[in-house]
Image 1 (spheres, rainbow, N blue to C red):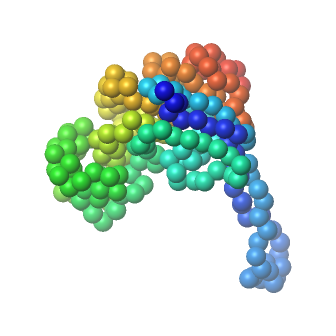
Image 2: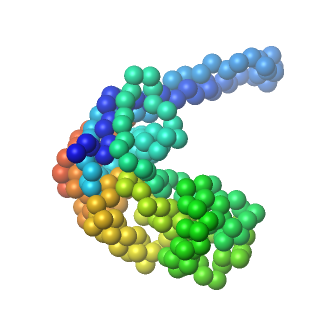
Image 3: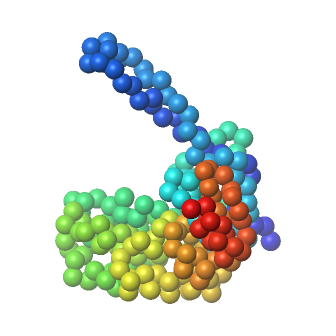
Length: 243
Protein backbone atom coordinates (compact mmCIF):
# COMPACT_ATOMS: atom_id res chain seq x y z
CA UNK A 1 0.00 0.00 0.00
CA UNK A 2 1.55 3.34 -1.02
CA UNK A 3 2.08 6.08 1.55
CA UNK A 4 -0.73 8.64 1.77
CA UNK A 5 1.76 11.51 1.45
CA UNK A 6 5.39 11.44 0.38
CA UNK A 7 7.52 14.59 0.58
CA UNK A 8 11.02 14.71 -0.87
CA UNK A 9 13.45 17.64 -0.55
CA UNK A 10 10.62 20.14 -0.35
CA UNK A 11 11.59 23.80 -0.13
CA UNK A 12 9.66 27.04 -0.40
CA UNK A 13 11.14 30.49 -0.92
CA UNK A 14 9.14 33.70 -0.90
CA UNK A 15 10.32 36.88 -2.58
CA UNK A 16 9.79 39.83 -0.25
CA UNK A 17 10.22 43.52 -1.11
CA UNK A 18 13.19 45.21 0.50
CA UNK A 19 12.24 47.83 3.06
CA UNK A 20 13.45 51.18 1.80
CA UNK A 21 14.15 54.10 4.12
CA UNK A 22 15.27 57.62 3.30
CA UNK A 23 14.19 61.21 3.11
CA UNK A 24 10.88 62.21 1.59
CA UNK A 25 12.75 63.63 -1.43
CA UNK A 26 14.61 60.32 -1.94
CA UNK A 27 11.39 58.32 -1.72
CA UNK A 28 9.63 60.60 -4.22
CA UNK A 29 12.53 60.28 -6.65
CA UNK A 30 12.20 56.48 -6.50
CA UNK A 31 8.48 56.43 -7.23
CA UNK A 32 7.81 54.06 -10.12
CA UNK A 33 11.13 52.30 -9.61
CA UNK A 34 10.67 48.60 -9.07
CA UNK A 35 11.62 47.63 -5.53
CA UNK A 36 14.35 45.08 -5.04
CA UNK A 37 13.11 41.86 -3.51
CA UNK A 38 14.91 39.56 -1.12
CA UNK A 39 14.46 35.82 -0.78
CA UNK A 40 13.11 34.30 2.42
CA UNK A 41 13.40 30.52 2.73
CA UNK A 42 10.31 29.34 4.64
CA UNK A 43 10.87 25.58 4.19
CA UNK A 44 14.31 24.11 3.62
CA UNK A 45 14.81 20.58 2.26
CA UNK A 46 11.89 18.87 4.05
CA UNK A 47 11.45 15.10 3.56
CA UNK A 48 9.04 12.64 5.24
CA UNK A 49 6.29 10.08 4.58
CA UNK A 50 2.85 9.74 6.13
CA UNK A 51 1.25 6.31 5.97
CA UNK A 52 -2.42 5.76 5.15
CA UNK A 53 -4.56 5.88 8.29
CA UNK A 54 -1.85 7.64 10.30
CA UNK A 55 -2.50 10.60 12.59
CA UNK A 56 0.52 12.81 12.02
CA UNK A 57 1.25 15.85 14.20
CA UNK A 58 3.28 18.89 13.17
CA UNK A 59 4.61 21.30 15.77
CA UNK A 60 6.99 24.26 15.79
CA UNK A 61 7.32 27.89 16.76
CA UNK A 62 5.43 30.59 14.90
CA UNK A 63 7.12 31.28 11.60
CA UNK A 64 8.80 27.89 11.39
CA UNK A 65 6.97 26.95 8.16
CA UNK A 66 4.22 24.61 9.45
CA UNK A 67 1.27 26.36 7.82
CA UNK A 68 3.21 26.89 4.61
CA UNK A 69 3.81 23.14 4.44
CA UNK A 70 0.07 22.42 4.76
CA UNK A 71 -0.76 25.01 2.11
CA UNK A 72 1.65 23.32 -0.29
CA UNK A 73 0.02 19.94 0.38
CA UNK A 74 -3.41 21.55 -0.15
CA UNK A 75 -2.29 22.99 -3.49
CA UNK A 76 -2.51 26.64 -2.38
CA UNK A 77 1.24 27.26 -2.73
CA UNK A 78 3.66 25.72 -5.19
CA UNK A 79 6.99 24.44 -3.85
CA UNK A 80 10.30 25.52 -5.31
CA UNK A 81 11.62 23.92 -8.46
CA UNK A 82 13.11 20.52 -7.73
CA UNK A 83 10.86 19.89 -4.72
CA UNK A 84 8.65 16.80 -4.84
CA UNK A 85 5.53 15.58 -3.08
CA UNK A 86 2.90 12.99 -3.94
CA UNK A 87 -0.55 12.48 -2.43
CA UNK A 88 -2.70 9.37 -2.77
CA UNK A 89 -6.30 10.34 -2.05
CA UNK A 90 -8.60 13.33 -1.94
CA UNK A 91 -7.80 16.05 0.60
CA UNK A 92 -10.16 18.05 2.81
CA UNK A 93 -8.24 21.11 4.08
CA UNK A 94 -9.24 22.94 7.26
CA UNK A 95 -6.94 25.94 6.81
CA UNK A 96 -7.64 29.56 7.77
CA UNK A 97 -11.20 28.72 8.72
CA UNK A 98 -13.81 31.23 7.66
CA UNK A 99 -11.53 33.17 5.31
CA UNK A 100 -13.63 32.26 2.26
CA UNK A 101 -16.94 33.36 3.75
CA UNK A 102 -18.80 36.30 2.20
CA UNK A 103 -19.55 38.70 5.05
CA UNK A 104 -22.63 40.10 3.27
CA UNK A 105 -24.28 36.67 3.04
CA UNK A 106 -26.12 34.88 5.83
CA UNK A 107 -24.75 31.88 7.65
CA UNK A 108 -27.10 29.63 5.68
CA UNK A 109 -25.97 31.11 2.36
CA UNK A 110 -22.32 30.74 3.30
CA UNK A 111 -22.84 27.09 4.18
CA UNK A 112 -24.15 26.39 0.68
CA UNK A 113 -21.46 28.52 -0.98
CA UNK A 114 -18.55 27.04 0.99
CA UNK A 115 -19.75 23.44 0.74
CA UNK A 116 -20.25 23.81 -3.02
CA UNK A 117 -16.69 25.09 -3.41
CA UNK A 118 -15.49 22.07 -1.41
CA UNK A 119 -17.25 19.73 -3.84
CA UNK A 120 -20.63 18.86 -2.28
CA UNK A 121 -23.75 18.81 -4.43
CA UNK A 122 -26.90 20.73 -3.54
CA UNK A 123 -28.60 17.49 -2.49
CA UNK A 124 -25.65 16.53 -0.28
CA UNK A 125 -25.66 19.95 1.39
CA UNK A 126 -29.43 19.73 1.95
CA UNK A 127 -28.96 16.35 3.62
CA UNK A 128 -26.15 17.56 5.87
CA UNK A 129 -27.27 21.10 6.59
CA UNK A 130 -28.94 20.41 9.95
CA UNK A 131 -25.89 18.48 11.16
CA UNK A 132 -23.58 21.32 10.11
CA UNK A 133 -25.66 23.85 12.04
CA UNK A 134 -26.03 21.59 15.07
CA UNK A 135 -22.31 20.89 15.28
CA UNK A 136 -21.52 24.61 14.98
CA UNK A 137 -24.05 25.42 17.73
CA UNK A 138 -25.46 28.28 15.64
CA UNK A 139 -29.10 27.28 15.28
CA UNK A 140 -30.31 30.80 16.15
CA UNK A 141 -27.91 32.68 13.90
CA UNK A 142 -28.11 31.11 10.44
CA UNK A 143 -30.29 33.85 8.92
CA UNK A 144 -27.91 36.54 10.22
CA UNK A 145 -25.28 38.05 7.93
CA UNK A 146 -21.84 36.68 8.71
CA UNK A 147 -20.47 40.22 9.11
CA UNK A 148 -22.35 40.25 12.42
CA UNK A 149 -20.69 37.00 13.60
CA UNK A 150 -17.78 36.96 16.00
CA UNK A 151 -14.57 35.44 14.62
CA UNK A 152 -15.20 32.36 16.75
CA UNK A 153 -18.69 31.88 15.30
CA UNK A 154 -17.36 32.14 11.74
CA UNK A 155 -14.60 29.62 12.41
CA UNK A 156 -16.94 27.16 14.09
CA UNK A 157 -19.30 27.27 11.12
CA UNK A 158 -16.42 26.87 8.66
CA UNK A 159 -15.06 23.91 10.63
CA UNK A 160 -18.49 22.30 10.67
CA UNK A 161 -18.84 22.64 6.90
CA UNK A 162 -15.40 21.19 6.15
CA UNK A 163 -15.97 18.34 8.61
CA UNK A 164 -18.75 17.10 6.30
CA UNK A 165 -16.33 16.52 3.41
CA UNK A 166 -15.82 12.78 3.09
CA UNK A 167 -12.14 12.75 2.13
CA UNK A 168 -9.54 10.14 3.15
CA UNK A 169 -6.93 12.80 4.00
CA UNK A 170 -7.61 15.69 6.39
CA UNK A 171 -5.32 18.73 6.75
CA UNK A 172 -6.02 20.55 10.02
CA UNK A 173 -4.27 23.83 10.83
CA UNK A 174 -4.77 25.06 14.40
CA UNK A 175 -8.43 24.06 14.36
CA UNK A 176 -8.32 23.58 18.12
CA UNK A 177 -8.20 27.36 18.46
CA UNK A 178 -11.82 27.31 17.33
CA UNK A 179 -14.47 27.93 19.95
CA UNK A 180 -14.57 27.19 23.65
CA UNK A 181 -13.72 24.10 25.70
CA UNK A 182 -17.02 22.36 24.94
CA UNK A 183 -16.57 22.85 21.20
CA UNK A 184 -12.97 21.64 21.40
CA UNK A 185 -14.17 18.44 23.06
CA UNK A 186 -16.56 17.94 20.14
CA UNK A 187 -13.59 18.36 17.81
CA UNK A 188 -11.69 15.74 19.82
CA UNK A 189 -14.60 13.33 19.46
CA UNK A 190 -14.55 13.97 15.71
CA UNK A 191 -10.82 13.19 15.63
CA UNK A 192 -11.53 9.87 17.33
CA UNK A 193 -14.17 9.13 14.70
CA UNK A 194 -11.73 9.98 11.91
CA UNK A 195 -9.15 7.59 13.38
CA UNK A 196 -11.71 4.80 13.63
CA UNK A 197 -12.66 5.38 9.99
CA UNK A 198 -9.02 5.01 8.96
CA UNK A 199 -8.59 8.55 7.69
CA UNK A 200 -5.12 10.03 7.33
CA UNK A 201 -4.92 13.16 9.48
CA UNK A 202 -2.23 15.85 9.51
CA UNK A 203 -2.63 18.25 12.43
CA UNK A 204 -0.67 21.47 12.97
CA UNK A 205 -1.09 22.54 16.57
CA UNK A 206 0.53 24.24 19.53
CA UNK A 207 -1.50 22.06 21.90
CA UNK A 208 0.79 19.39 23.45
CA UNK A 209 -2.21 17.59 24.93
CA UNK A 210 -3.82 17.05 21.53
CA UNK A 211 -0.50 15.88 20.11
CA UNK A 212 -0.01 13.28 22.86
CA UNK A 213 -3.65 12.18 22.75
CA UNK A 214 -4.00 11.60 19.02
CA UNK A 215 -0.74 11.57 17.09
CA UNK A 216 0.88 8.28 16.04
CA UNK A 217 4.00 10.18 15.00
CA UNK A 218 5.03 13.82 15.04
CA UNK A 219 7.45 16.15 13.35
CA UNK A 220 9.16 19.22 14.79
CA UNK A 221 9.97 21.98 12.31
CA UNK A 222 12.47 24.55 13.58
CA UNK A 223 13.80 27.47 11.57
CA UNK A 224 12.38 26.03 8.34
CA UNK A 225 14.01 22.61 8.69
CA UNK A 226 13.06 19.28 10.28
CA UNK A 227 14.52 19.18 13.75
CA UNK A 228 13.08 15.80 14.74
CA UNK A 229 10.54 13.21 13.63
CA UNK A 230 9.22 10.25 15.59
CA UNK A 231 7.40 9.51 18.85
CA UNK A 232 5.11 12.43 19.79
CA UNK A 233 6.26 12.60 23.42
CA UNK A 234 9.92 12.69 22.41
CA UNK A 235 9.19 15.33 19.78
CA UNK A 236 7.36 17.44 22.37
CA UNK A 237 10.29 17.14 24.77
CA UNK A 238 12.61 18.42 22.06
CA UNK A 239 10.17 21.21 21.23
CA UNK A 240 10.09 22.42 24.83
CA UNK A 241 13.88 22.11 25.11
CA UNK A 242 14.33 24.59 22.26
CA UNK A 243 13.01 27.29 24.59
